[in-house]
Amino acid sequence: MQSIGEVNAGGAPRTIGKYPVSGVLGKGAMGVVYKAIDPVIKRPVAIKTIRRDAADDDDRIAGLIARFRQEAEAGGRLVHPAIVSVYDYGEDGELAYIVMEFVEGNTLRRYFQRDMRFEEADVVSIMVQLLDALAYAHSKGVWHRDVKPANIIVMNDGRLKIADFGIARIEASTLTQVGSVLGTPGFMAPEQYRGGAIDCRIDIFSAGVVFYQLLGGVSPFTGPIEALVHKVCNEDPPPPSSLSGLDHLARFDAIVAKALAKQAQDRFESALAFKNAILEAYARPANPTIAEETILHDVVRSPFVADPSHSAPPVSSPPKTLPATAEIVRAAQASRTRPGAVAPGPAAAPVPAAAPVPAARSGLDPGVLAAIESRLRRFVGPIAGLMVRKAAARTPHVSVLVRMLAEQLSDPGDRVAFMQASALDPEASAPASAAASAGDLDATRQMQDGTSLTTAQIERATRALTLYLGPIASIVCKRAAIPGISIDEYHRSLATHLVDAADRDGFLRDLATRF
Image (tube, rainbow, N blue to C red; front, side, top):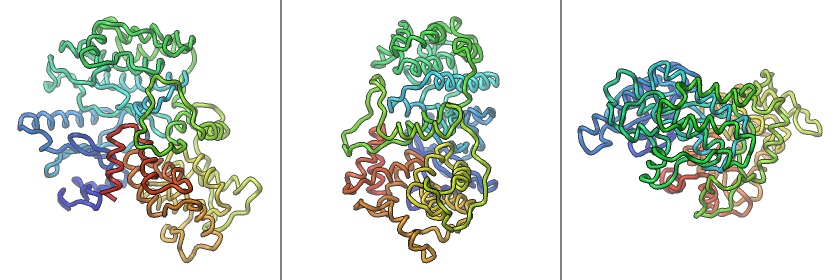
């Protein structure tokens, strides 16, 4: 096995333990999260690492490693569809690592930063999924202790995953003692600031903060840390319905107030009781997933004007609908029978290999497009329908369509698997292949007409942006390649899709040094 010191061209280790590394998913102060492959069962995994020399003294290092092991223990005992699964823990050279389920999606924090205002049905769906997961964790003796939007992932199919049990409290554990203060200001319960005894109701409080922000559009507790702590411990925020201006949301105000009670005994006694109160007020069944058009609203956006000083609008400003959004939402609604439900993809059907399909006036044969969408859905989720429709508008040839879609998959293994499932030879997938017909070449080149950027420049930018946005980066990069844009303007335009200034700087730095 190669040592941890051996790295790929991009700076990532070639292997961590037994797992071959394929890329970087994110970076933090103490370590890096990598995408890798389980060599035994061939599934993608995420590997969260922490450097054993990340702290400046031995006691702090020991504490960090102990807490890292506890995260693995807490996650490892939880097997629930709304909790990120933990598969393995290990130490390799200077790294300690946790092998976790690989999840594609965006955090709820990203949605809030993008000024997303959720429909009532989506708010209820998010809270029901969140509270179901917390109820399960509590039943196993695990309290998360850091429930917040950054740890809630909205997957591409509209389901939720809770991540990061790094400061979880396990009953009977001696690692977290009374008097320790761990968590995120603004989401911590009053008893966490006071350093007193805690129980699972700290998660009820944090979930109440999330519920408040979903309903009202802002956090109930804000300001400098001293003022924030005072508000959490002593002040009741205004009802969320008074901020949203939507009278029908007033039915949830009393529920939010109970979840945010200053004394633990005044809150809901369990996550299940909290969930049931929401459903009783809502008075109808909750959708099992949030609506597909909500997901598309966030991840598929028209390019911003290139402006390096661009920053995200404040959460409290009115929601905006970008020009591309209406088209996307209409297309999503037309392809689904019930808003909020993710319909299963149609059964796969054989697709002729590299041969033009007779096209009607509306484009390629609908049955062929349905089969391709079904295969693509396995890799990108419900956004597959939109990707297929947009690509099909550019070419009448199945072979070119499949290649165009494959280019938008960031993982090389996924590209090969998708093309093989569509009866195309991956080795012949390059646009300039001698096997491609003149019609295929012309259709493929349409993607580059009118812009001074080269294919290599766009691909390089896509690889860099994928580290921050995931597979949707390929769509963003292609749409930003507008006629006449310079390479510097192109890079700055892409950077505006990243909300955090640190992410924007890192992305531009990656383009300059990594690729």
